[in-house]
Image 1 (cartoon, rainbow, N blue to C red):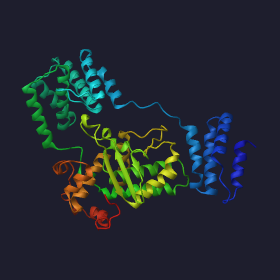
Image 2: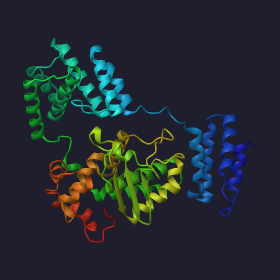
Image 3: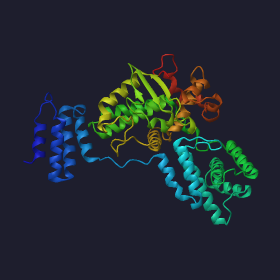
Image 4: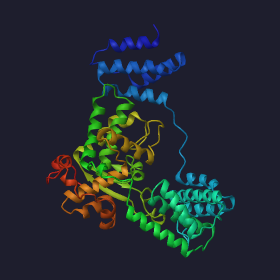
Length: 434
């Protein structure tokens, strides 16, 4: 009888009151079987966990999954930083433009603010380069000079709007003109500024065409969906990486609704660093300014700080930290990667995840930024202070900003599904207090 069959027989003959196999014994066994049978050892070990869970229960056998994941999934190469991604795009520009842009990126990376040279974020730097690259391709294909004129810029914007939207065209024009001030310091053109202003006004009239009323399913529904996913994780027959993923995704949705921040901010959450549970029913969050949507020269400022009061949410996060989070790795990130131990999921993956999860549940995609719209709408309509409450929740300075971009409450309260969904949250004794 080989080692696998011997251990399997040992588990089958064990009584529920016996202690499950230790972490060290399991690690030693799996390492030995890997040497003997190669990758087949992983399937054998997964079967051991299934049999063990029937004897001792899924929770007491969760450490089987830790051993299996540690052996199967190895750390990946570090992701490129946003600044490294911006620098990689320099090659898309004409060679004689590259030194000026490399210098601008270096200045912004080091935070060396100077008169007439505002600091750019990594994302803005990459976007300006991307816009200029498209402009260069357009000019070369039409035999035009690279220095923009009002007429040429308007023609290019029309082409972009045909493929995308007026908002995209307006953004591209703004980035092209910003880029030209790097290539040619002091660059100015009244014709180009007139075209840029015209397209900005068109974009404002068009509105955000990527946002639809169907995406307003209600923050309460998304908050509840998160807890449904956590319960699904608890009920899985095996306490493995897939159960940990379900619980992680549930925390993402529920906390995302309670703390309506952007994906970049959520990706920074980590136990003991940016997220703590200071007392019963309390969740304290402190996100550094560099992870917020702020002008680059304010990225060293005060962090975003908030304490949520919710017994249910705090207990769920505590359970996650104790029972599910260790199945990913030994790190502290609140939203760890399934594919790369020791790292958090990226902000783009957070957006995709929330979209996938809500589409599966509600039939419509609600990416993380659109979740903010749901929070603002529900707060504007049902909290006593209305728009002011939404302003505070989203971290905006101006109530007008919320009304312009996020308040879609008109007509929403008339939908029976929405009323049923939020009815339980409208009393003074709501479960979640922000």
